[in-house]
Image (cartoon, rainbow, N blue to C red; front, side, top):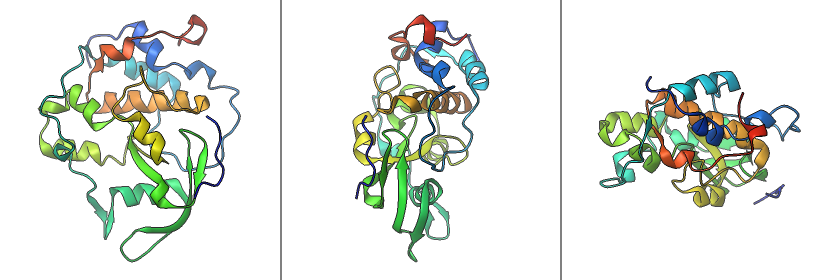
Length: 221
């Protein structure tokens, strides 16, 4: 049930890339507070995100040849009977109640991508901020299955977040050059999450992420 819908260590990266991925960062100050909600861990400051962005390797976008979601095993058991999805639902929700199998039976989930609040876990997806297919195109194709499993279930960085299901589905495997959260006030945070995940996992920055440029006034200084 929808409750409160709201409209919608490598070569130095170029400033074009910084402009695209950090679009909206400069607008962070002065944004009205959104409804209280849990947030993923490890979201960096603007300065840290900029430093991490500068350290990313720029490479031509790879192919999805050979890609399969099965090569990124998820959701794995995290504790007791709780898997990764269930852990994120508990972390990102409010007043979440689970049954003996760790399935959420009630609670409230605010989706920062679009500003909607939900009371049924079935209306919520767990988004991989950097999609699995995007990771594959950015270097994960050469990883072991064990490393891909760790990436797909990463609870220590801002890689997993509970959001409205159809918003997550509309994102698919797109990068920030073609998809940004509908709620513009969250785009700064989303950009920082994207950067730090790519940085910490040693993924490359693809040319498609430099495809467009925001006005000069919004570029990081």
